[in-house]
Image (cartoon, rainbow, N blue to C red; front, top):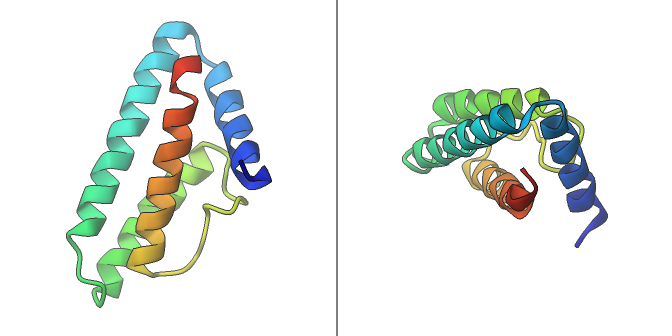
Length: 102
């Protein structure tokens, strides 16, 4: 596991540690659903539709800022559909990795 992935997982754990068990579980579900929706909506866009890809990137960056991972490897200003989908998928995977701890 890379150091960047481990650092992001640590920040995710820290984020969820601020909530009680019920809230933590609910928030995890909402976050997972939001990332699923974001990935689905982004996948439907044409790679040349930079305006809507930029809007999806803005949503993704908002999620990253909320989770306090705005300066990590998964946070990019690139308006590129492939990179954005890759970052969303990576974040989903890291979130799934810590699911048993939530």
